[in-house]
Amino acid sequence: MIRITLAVALLAAPAYAAENKEDSCKYQGQVMAAVQAARLDRVSQADVEQVILDSNPEWPEQYSKAIPQLTGHIYAMKRRDLKATEFGPLMEQQCLENWDQIQAMKQQLKTN
Image (tube, rainbow, N blue to C red):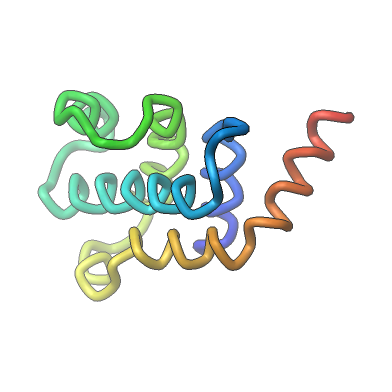
């Protein structure tokens, strides 16, 4: 389930040449954690993106493009499940593990 979300987030967050996978995965994990925190704080799904952006997040602006995709995934889950698992670190770990595969998917999309 999180792997699909991971692929969506990676594809939604454009990578820049100067960015390495550790930084990119860290930022993606931070975005996921912010969406999870908003859900646990009972922010309405319609307001999540604006609430997160208003908090002046520390990640580069392009990563905010993944918020809507992650919001749909996180808000589909039960709050009790969100309390049991920290999805930010999990997403960062899976991003690092699947980096090469996701980059190949991005390259394939560019050529099609």
